[in-house]
Length: 166
Image (cartoon, rainbow, N blue to C red; front, side, top):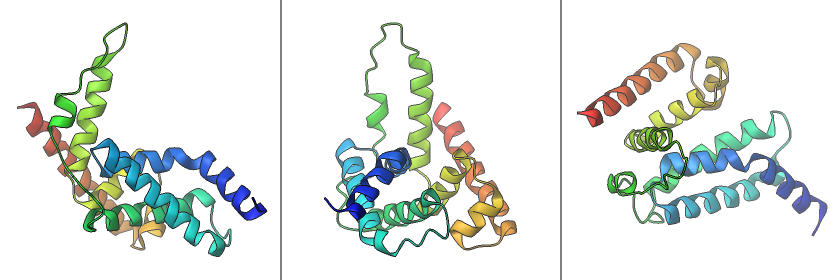
């Protein structure tokens, strides 16, 4: 294994949580999440020789991962998309486990999956605690546009969550 490969694997290992979160936000089925995780990793590897370090590796990774997830949704590579039964039929082991927290988290991911791909990206950045300036740089839009689109995405998510309660 050469030094470039070792360096890449170390960085992926350190930042794989980002890829897992994006995969979970965009895909409901485990096999699809695994496929998306692999596709994101592949795209990052392809682009890695061009990474110049002008930004943080994680910032660069976010951009590639989100773009790959959006493209993946539109491609023939995906097998399934939203399935509401995924979480309602999922049984959680109840041995001293806070299943209400897990259930709420599952409902949140289910609601996020119902958003369009761009709104998902805004919600992801929000959940990752990115600033408006950082989101603007990532998305290539103004900070004012970020605020407007972020509020719209959050309102859509609230509406979905509220309609699911009924």
